[in-house]
Amino acid sequence: MSGANFPRIEAAEAGSIRRGATILRGGGLVAFPTETVYGLGADASRESAVARIFEAKKRPRFNPLIVHVRDLGHAESLGDFNDGARRLAETFWPGPLTLVLPRRTDCAIAHLASAGLDTIALRVPAHPVARQLLTESRLAIAAPSANASGAVSATAAAHVAVSLGSAVDLILDGGPAPLGIESTIVGFDESGPLLLRPGALAREDIETVTGQLGNLPSDQIVSPGRLRSHYAPSTPLRLDAREANENEALLAFGPDVPAHVAAVRNLSPAGDLREAAANFFAMLRELDAAGCTGIAVMPLPEHGLGEAINDRLRRAAAPKVE
Ligand code: TXA
Ligand code: MG
Image 1: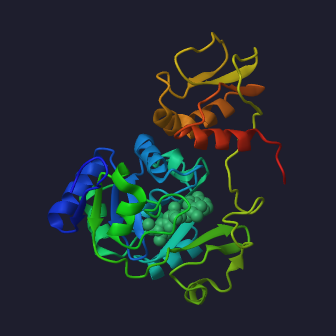
Image 2: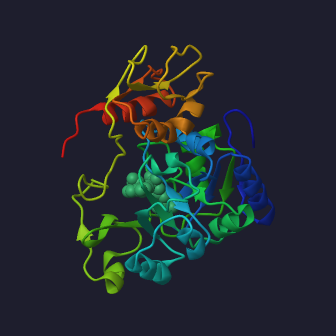
């Protein structure tokens, strides 16, 4: 069944998985089963493909996504593994464990997948369909749970179809997700490993490898001062600017950009919000590094991905609370 309101669902087998890999390589979205829940996947190295994920999930804001890879070697090319992280990976991968690690300086993953953070969440899934999709596509696949924002995680192809509809190019049906709850997320701070999200891998199992895990306050994925939850530029932002002052950098949007001599980046000269989302974190970092006294930000519309971009801009512009 395909058409405006009916997403394509195909039974997961060699041919459909190959088609899924081709869609991913072309920048499209493919929902696929993992052993925990269904994921909504895109090429993690491509900012514009990752932007489509947020658009499809109708997330009111950018949350960092889990990047799925085929093996530990691939993961080590993206994140900086400490000894503890490597031991956990060797023990529990493939499986329902996600590790949050510093991004390597040469990390080839879209900044949008990390929501601008200097860290990356990595997981090697065990489900054969997910593994075959990773092998066929030869990609790192960014994939949040395949549900609309605020809805429960999808554990069957039909749930994905109901939740996300035609925003997905293909849904690979591999039957019910065997575990049915999300992966356990472990991060690290100066004092060692921390449980960031309880999930399908029990804390006790992890602790046989790490010793006692530190905790974070419940429902706070990352806490200020320990692991940073949001990227904030160190240069002050001035929102809804129509023009930039002499010493300000300018983050522009749309075709009508005021003439300006200091650093300028245009999120989307054409005024396209998906393109703006794809450029957002990389351009904000570039302007933050430009050595200006401030960053003037032109207004962006509040619809579509504009809502998420504006949310992130308002947080970045708010006075810092420590
Ligand atoms: O089982 C799972 O983990 C599923 C399957 C598809 O792999 N995925 C999943 O993704 O549950 P999602 O996006 O629904 O949840 C990912 C969680 C979010 O709470 C996010 O904040 C956290 O991972 N996360 C991702 N990157 C992070 C980072 N760099 N630092 C801290 N938390 C991060
Ligand atoms: Mg989720």
